[in-house]
Amino acid sequence: MKLALIGFGQAGGKVVDEFLAFDASIGGGFIESAIAVNSATTDLKGLENVSETNRVLIGQARVKGHGVGADNELGAEVAEEDIDEIQGAIDRVPVHEIDAFLIVAGMGGGTGSGGAPVLAKHLQRIYTQPVYGLGILPGTDEGGIYTLNAARSFQTFVNEVDNLLVFDNDVWRSAGESVEGGYDRINREIVERFGLLFAAGEVDQGDHVAESVVDSSEIINTLSGGGVSTIGYASEVVETDDGLLASLTGDDGFDEGAATNRMTSLVRKATLGRLTLPCDVGSTDRGLVVATGPPGQLNRKGVERGRQWLEDETGSMEIRGGDYPIPHRDEVGAIALLSGVTDVPRIDQLQQVAIEAQETTENVRATAEDDFASLMDTGGELDALF
Ligand code: GDP
Image 1 (cartoon, protein in one colour):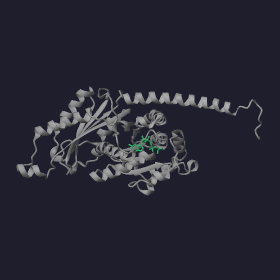
Image 2 (tube, rainbow, N blue to C red):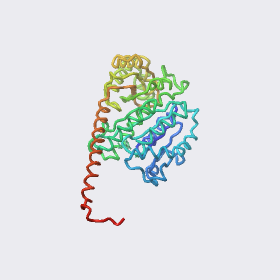
Image 3 (tube, rainbow, N blue to C red):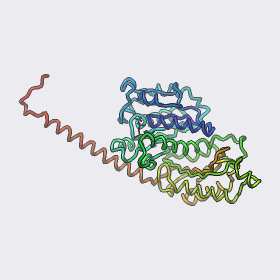
Image 4 (cartoon, protein in one colour):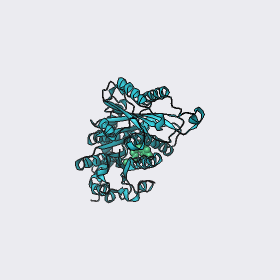
């Protein structure tokens, strides 16, 4: 499906930048336009693939290009004040060509955390296309303020979008990695999963002899109904269509039974392995299974079996399925999109920690006021100048 991508804040911008690289590498064509919005000049300068004209600096009057720190209330304010600047970039998007907007933001910071929900609300008011969010949760070791920001932003963002796709940094960290190196790797994981999903709805049916290509309306229908979504992905290296196997066996090397078993097992791995947001799979409301890989390695039966398995596993009657053929790819993969999930321990934990952080902040503030008053108290014996 064709998307207008808007990266809000540093994480949002970097992930959108990575989406552009991924789209080009698979010849996906799912990005119609890509925009980056930030209150920090240096973050915008660091981008590589988003065009200069589509980099929007907001909040200049208030923070002079230095960012809003981790103040997401200020992030929301500057987004509201400068919504016309953002709209200026969106005016250049051929909106009639797109299927949806996707706003990407890290939820723990300031600019994206505060600004993304403001932009979602604005877009919903103006356009008829669905507005999706891709929200990145902070690691648990980032501290109270990031958790509080993320919980408040999540609470707001989910109500302003047609569906909030979530990625949890906490589950995807690796020990011994630098923060920057870690983010680069994590960002590639993000764009591979969400990129393959959105690119899936962008295959021209005439291009391939695919048996059951996923259509963008199937992605939209799976996401419609709102709430929170998560994605699982598993893949296996295979010989490409023109590879070694064909030359050895003298035939096309395609084994129907093996391909079906492989796809069923990949769907299980995708669903029961590491999700972008871990959850109880049984709480899924709607789902979509996408089989990716070289067209010669995909078969209808494999997707159908995988789809049926997910239906049993989730107890949902609304599980769709289809192919995303990618010529010359040396991997067969399965994407499981679980939409409208409700049993998500990480969100409960985030909210709990945020409530505690909020109370602690209020207490510290109250005590600090008292302590300052006592520091300055001279019993009325010292006069201030004025
Ligand atoms: P903003 O610029 O004020 O919106 O804030 P940032 O985007 O810098 O940070 C918000 C949160 O996003 C942080 O707390 C991190 O959890 C996360 N984050 C920052 N950079 C990246 C990145 O490159 N990739 C990922 N996955 N997360 C990031």
